[in-house]
Image (cartoon, rainbow, N blue to C red; front, top):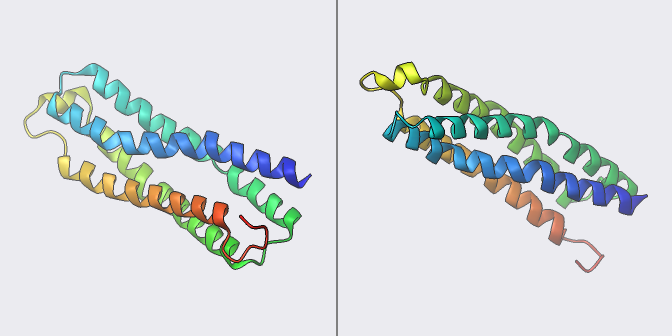
Length: 159
């Protein structure tokens, strides 16, 4: 059963977290492209799609820690330091995504309406830069969790 839980946990992480990290990273440049060329309907549609991917896969991503806890419980490692640190970093990544990335994406999208883009001074380029910073923090947290899951400091499994 442990191998099944681990496989589902890893597959869920790849399928759910991967798209969020990529789409979130692509969002700020896509929004800047809309700001630079406001008549580009394709760029605006792409930016909206990236936000939707982030929202949907963030919800789907809840499966990852659920199966992670089940796997850790099955393996008997719930009290291991590397896992506790991974859980804390995962929680922090979720907070960054839910409180800093997704709301800022929504706010930027609200400023990218076709009506506002035709007016002078529409859009806030600095907001996209701040969003890129928060997205980078989110991605760095996930990368750290991934490394911890692979090397498991103090593990006796030889990994």
